[in-house]
Figure 1 (cartoon, rainbow, N blue to C red):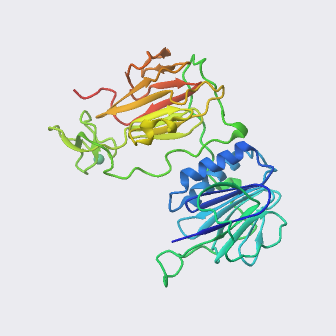
Figure 2: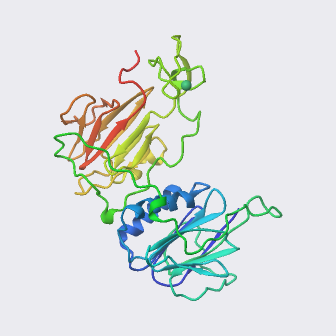
Figure 3: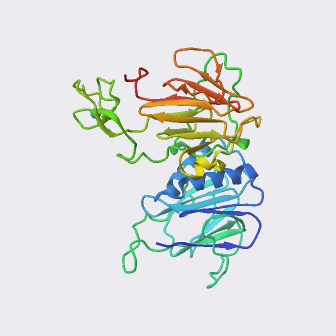
Length: 378
Ligand SMILES: [Zn+2]
């Protein structure tokens, strides 16, 4: 399976991650380009990355259009066929016809069959010609460009038919009423004067939620656990299954793959699955522990720039996560579950992170939500 993305010369930005490609026109803000780039990085590896991206962007646009004049478009695979989103003065050419968003809506979701190619660029541009041997072949990354041509490969090798796709529909976008509303940010605790509420991303864009795909079963570390009659893994202290509520007969715990511990819910509604050790900060990926694969990364942006590149870390031992401030200048604060006051963590001293706890760092708040009990097994 190989797709070829040929960058067209002109103003704007072309982004490719995996099988998802996007173009943003020259009037798109840096925040919009950054949002597209981050979102593509998140969904690019998925076999239905195009659909994840289009659903997410449509959800945002159904609530509010942060930059109605900006042209952008993205194309990627869906569960069946491919899907594109067109916004503002952007167009998509499928080899025979040109599609633009209806002006009264301003954007359109377009199911399509790359046949064998689609071209994306500014509205009104002539149909591009495929030049064999063009050097502008984008494999991955973000480059200047005035649009792109996508030539898709066929799954399954030579001789197999292309995957079925829904028929083309033009000028009938999924209207705002038929796409999911973006979820609201969670309520925050009283007295949280450290907290900047509302959208902290420029222009109202926020990164794609980190929980786009379910965790692969049996991928967690080996811990003590019990199984319900249906075989769901459970925290050993539970008497009913967290998933199906079936009674669990008391018996000695076994060893098995731990399911994800829960999620970290950010103040902007982003959800991050907690199933391994994490570094949190403005640029944690640069830490050598991350490069070595010891830690995952939770990258946050702070409205006041007060996050350290590596600000705090979460480590999980068995079923017990702990949080540690990494000596940050502005500190890491914690509201423990069942209490109301923020306390500043002593640098480099781990504190238990119990379900229901709120963590504040760099004027951002993460809430730990988990189906597992507060009481830790002894
Ligand atoms: Zn169960």
